[in-house]
Length: 486
Image (tube, rainbow, N blue to C red):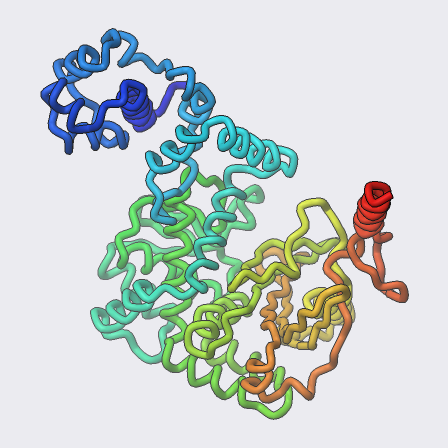
């Protein structure tokens, strides 16, 4: 694999810095010996500048090495563990800038403790291979961390939506016709329905030049989101992007991040912040659980359940002091459940996805609702998304959550059903803020069957093998401690 051009600069800078430190030269001393300014040397060592030939010759002479060795990609033996990192695209794959980290800063840490940190990075890579984690999954994991660090609320994107509303004098009710008009008149789009070939049947849209092809099987709600999302790309001038929705191929983290920004824009445009805050105030103040209210919001804003609950995760932490929440999306097809999206704000870690193929607890409202949906569809009783809620108390944990969920069949894949759920950690302060908690059923739940200590579970799908292994390990530790005491 050819070394990335940015990594060539980083390699050169590392070599210069290591040679300078080995010879106990300060930046000012090397500047004096080489005739190169301190500021320029600093830029070289950070991997931001690659000097011209004449300056490289002066550096080689000042550092007492040959020109050929200095420009080669060979690293000093102290930096040898970094060779694999620099020869790979790891530093380009890692979206360090999202977290305010420059590649040179990471390499600086690695160069100060190369053996330990290189082993750590190698371990992470090995873990990702063992769990069959693709680059795409890695990108989405980073995006999820980015959202969690910001409590999934982005003021700059909210401001872009308000600027759009003012610029285009957006009506109170934003229709697909109005969105189409803005794309066609302002951005010269051509928009038409398309019957995608079977291999692309799950695509919602594809953009070819300025022609937006929308799957003809989408309902009006889904079309509005596709159109609003496309306006987000154009209005915010997001250049690096995917041209299909959903994903077919991911080429960079920038594509993933811009897709998130355009999607956030679409949801905020279709669910005005101030109006939605008022609705959330009403929802939280009910004395009894009102599932019909969530269906009414779906109709009012003409959005999908996932859009509705995602918008809640934007505003609940920021404006209602409910930062400790999680979002889950489960799919159900042919009797199998899969957790396809998750987000944990304020560091919540249960429930969470299982990379080991374990069986999620069938007592979760997310899953019971999908089972009820399957039964309703089979009996031809389905009319609207199913809504339910419960208080979940976890076995072997003091955590207690309010969890409410919405389930529906998916378009354009009717054999697939999804449920989306929000869970809010119930502290005493939170309990005083939500009016309908006492009207909800309380249910003991686990995370996965393999980790659950429930002895009387009527819906257990597997033996608690992981729990047994943990118990065996604890018993060995206790026995060893007792042996040492003797």
